Length: 153
Image (tube, rainbow, N blue to C red; front, side):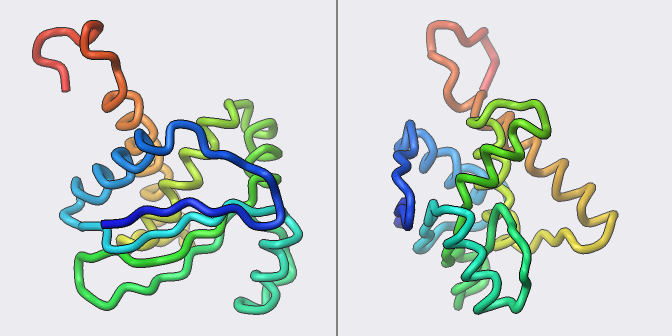
C-alpha cells in the first residue's frame, strides 16, 4: 500500500501527510477497497489544463483529473492530478477553507476510483454526500485522544 504525493509546475507541500494517508486508507476501507498504489500530483492550472486537452480533449480548467490504473477488483491504483490554483479559487467561491476544499477534491478523486460517478444529477448528489462524509471522517480520525468522549470513534 503506497500513497505518494508529488508536485508539478508549482511549489506545494501537503500538510499532515501521514494523517492524510491514514484518512485516504480509511475512506477506501469503509467501501471494502484497499489501496495498491495511489499518486496525488499537485499542480498548476496550466499543467492540468494541458493534461485535460491532451488526454481528454477538453479545453477547460478543472480542479481534478483522475486516471484509473487498477487491474484487480477492489484494489485502487491510480493517478490523481489536483490543480492547487482551482482548489484555492473554489474555496473562495464556496466560502470554505482551502484545507476543506482540498480534502473535498482529494476524496473526490478517490471516490471516482471506487466507482462513484458525477455526470448525472443523482450521481453528483451522491458524490457530494460521500465527499462530505469523507471530510467529516478526517476530523473524527484526528481528534486528540484526550478530548474524545467515551464511546466516540
